[in-house]
Image (cartoon, rainbow, N blue to C red):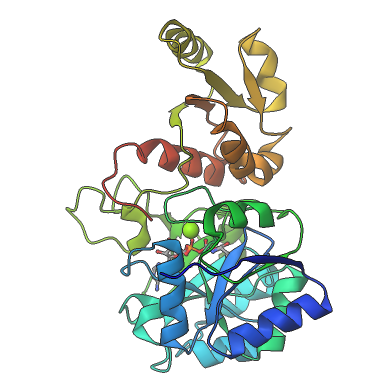
Length: 346
Ligand code: TXA
Ligand code: MG
């Protein structure tokens, strides 16, 4: 791949128009969403979409999310809109919920990795919405990191990963949610959460008035290849900083302290990652605080990973309670830890 000059420009009217022009003419551009930064292309242009996979080094069997500005656009992407989508969209769109639906034939196989379904969402960031409208087309976009790395929550993170590989980054500041959207499969009979994310499971269940299954990465994600993964990307390494990550169930203070001590003895610089009110439990140990609650933890997690990898060899992460955004934060921590073992990159 020939190196290109990567520009970071402000996500104002002029910047958005430039990015939209790029996307209209078969190019790619990174842009802010409320969850994480995305790397976008015209969802109907297979060649442009291919450029995303090349820039990220993303395996071709991991499909992309198509970002729409309104319901009319969703209809250009999805073959049928189940009733559940109408119910969920009233509450969660624009916002961090992605639904998997049967796809229209016009959506190229490159976007969906050859699946008969397509993942769709309406993002809540004003710059993302303005970009989609100005481009006049749905935008296919994965997170704008190099495959396998923590997702980018600031323009700088995109630059650090993709400098020389993409022409343009729209800078819209730091992302408010900080973890990716929740992916909910509505293409079959029963709704199934394929990836926990910015829209908490309990809220989806309340909106649908029913319990919703989740496919954990441990059962059905296909890491060991025994079952076909429903969300193909899950078998790959994810969210992993350049240092080692270990996770510990909440309340495991003595184990964490032991692991920390172990690192000290081996001369490995390690940090404990937890939330504000648990910081004092770790005495003088090096603690990196994610925030006061799960929402702040979600907002800061990937930035903390990216900052910490420059300084530490090992990160000891204390898991949060599973409710609200805790489930998504824990999932990202566990995946980053599993990254040490998984064979491939995503
Ligand atoms: O918040 C987000 O979702 C961000 C922003 C940019 O919108 N995007 C994002 O995209 O996280 P990405 O590509 O990093 O993750 C998309 C996830 C992957 O796990 C992928 O396997 C799954 O969605 N996915 C996409 N299309 C699918 C489909 N047709 N069926 C099942 N899973 C799908
Ligand atoms: Mg990603």
